[in-house]
Length: 100
Image (cartoon, rainbow, N blue to C red; front, side, top):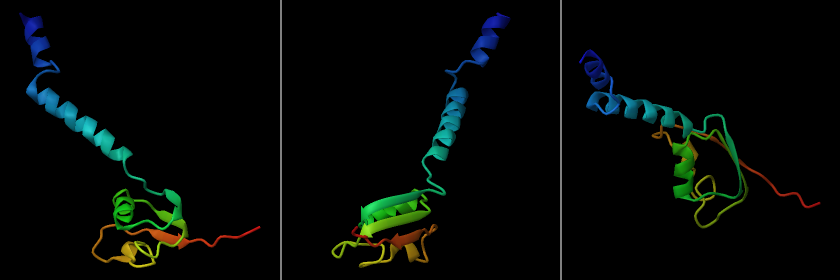
């Protein structure tokens, strides 16, 4: 009986153990989705939706080659990376193409 009580108290199927395992797993996954100190190189300037995805991923630097005059949100139409009310800002660089 003591062994059965011990096994049932430490079972992974107990509600408390399931919740604590789930929280630990979520904390480990949470560390993986952030792109702190990462840079991204793009051929075109991102739209607002893509720029917000970059902002939420905590990217550090964005480099892009071509401006997007219709939907660009990192300098052409909007400057989303400079908004004061956002909780993260990143550096944006517009690269110039060199024809060799």
